[in-house]
Length: 115
Ligand SMILES: [Zn+2]
Image (cartoon, rainbow, N blue to C red; front, side, top):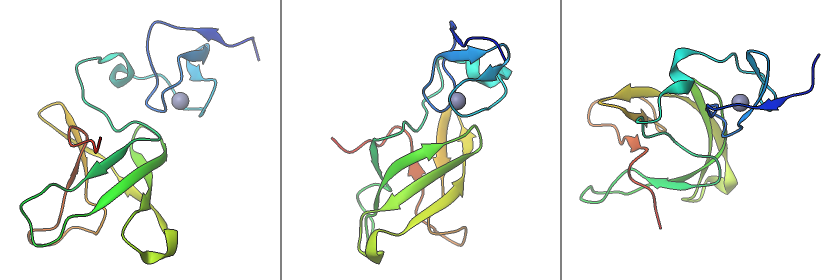
């Protein structure tokens, strides 16, 4: 293992430090995806909403993430429950379905950050 060095690309977890091809923080392998800077991603520590205009609006904070999954904290009760949800990308924006996939399920979008 060599000393991690700061690279030009940012890992999905937010780290810029790489040990060769491996992220020094989360162990993720650098992939083509990590070099995309135009993609809007979920960021650790930030809070996102499923969006207004629905019967119910949910908010979730990103606790940690990998390239394909986010671990989120549910802000609406559930006793601080956390869950791991898969990420999909549509039109360069990351999305996740924290309540599961069903008809009209609420979708978390990385461009709907709660201030
Ligand atoms: Zn990482």
